[in-house]
Length: 359
Image (cartoon, rainbow, N blue to C red; front, side, top):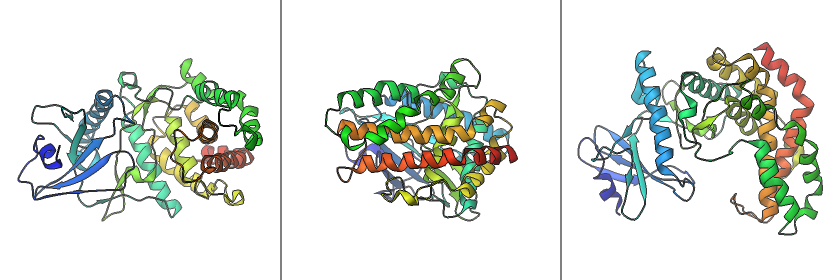
């Protein structure tokens, strides 16, 4: 269907002035529709990646509805501080066409901006505060009512036993000989993978709403004040542990190099950035986290980094079937990069724990 035909089936206000493609996302196709006084975002959901759009949109609507009510109670601006979705003419949460394509729409937040990287510790601190606020706001949300749209997403032991070990055993592409040291590195740490999943299983830490894609560019900032407005891109919102989001933020944002940097001498954890993010995160989420969760924050950065390295290594062994690659050893380079970051975190773990305690 033509994008204008799609637009005509949502409850937009005013007359359509123009529509154009927007953003640089790699999964969903995104458009901006200008209706004069208001602009709207229309997204085509990639159902090859998100195979259960009903569950995905149920999660998104449940979370944004909860946030909207909370923001109103606190005297905030719900149309700027969370996503406001627009229903279809039939009152549905998203549009499903006769050929199976899925579209959703929400209000475009004017005078907002996204950043792709944190150029200063202060910027990283602001992102920590944004995700900490997101976690705190959803502290009373019944996480067990959300669908697990990507099963075992951060279940590191499950990924080890059900993905990594089979990939090593089958070695179907004959690549294991190229990464014996990396395989051994992961295997040596198998016994340390269980602390979060075990704590969840026995109720030592609570099940919470998790974002699962805590990159800086998933935060809207006010273009005028520079302060964070809202956390966006809620497609991967699921039940899990708050530690998963904290750990992945550190893995991605506190590393001194890109995750496919070949020169491993450039790869380490920047403790100034670690402290900045933790400071921002705990300033907002500190009162809602349990003592056990705080105790595991530094560990979570180590765990999620190891998990990511293991996933890159698994995909390399399987022939690069999951992550997009630019050259034959791309996933192996990524794996080595992440495992080097793990090693550096191990050397600095005492310092990381001291930073958390000091905050």
